[in-house]
Image (cartoon, rainbow, N blue to C red; front, side, top):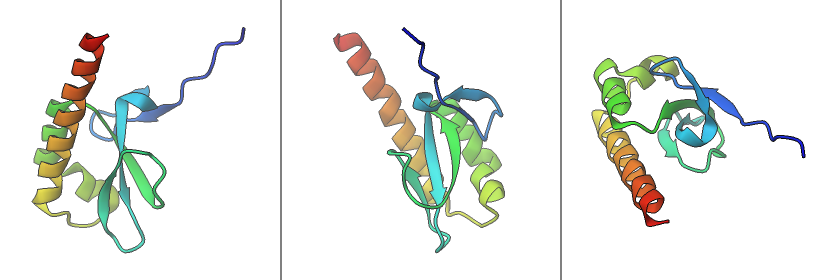
Length: 99
């Protein structure tokens, strides 16, 4: 049986290539609105960040997505991103231990 290819994406903060399942996509649409894309299918330009709270905090400190998308992003977005990643990490731990 042939082994499936694992899609890889680059984490915009660390520059490391990671499996797509370990990352979350951030999207800028045509109206310059920034949003978290949990499905990975929203229209617009995307950038990926690892599901790690420390990396999300580093992105907030360095304003990584402002630079990547070339626009000023409200600080509330970074707070939302940190909260989302924290929730996803906790959820993954819960379901991993629940098996």
